[in-house]
Length: 183
Image (tube, rainbow, N blue to C red):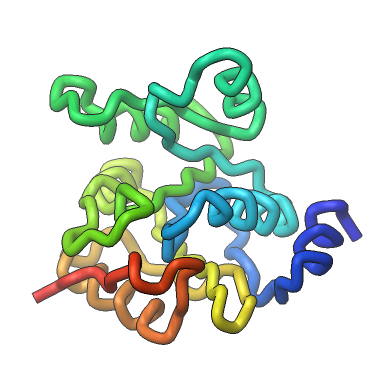
């Protein structure tokens, strides 16, 4: 048993599910209501043998955190800059790497938000990779992959399927999580 698995079990988590045997995928991590989500999610992905990459705002990349974050798989992005073309940057990373697992929290923040960001969908579509839904259910202390969604579906259908996956899932801070709207 890996140290990742041992630590998750020590923290009281039960790991469920399995990832498809793909070399590339966009992984949705939700609900994202606490900084602990990153730690638990990263440990779980390592348990499954994945070396995940994740997007994090550029402001966190100050010494010594920048070095540590890069070692953990962080990809810095400049938020709020429409010219940085984050979607194209991520698609380029998918195309340049034989194996690439990109973790995204579509809420875009740990605070409650009514509209999920569409970048995960655009990246998956343009890179032609599946979307894998994972959960961090603090209510049941269960984490792991839940469902695979093809990236060629209409956006509203993807959001509908995602909402179904999370309708009985509790975030660490439940009042800060809202299901995606698809109507």
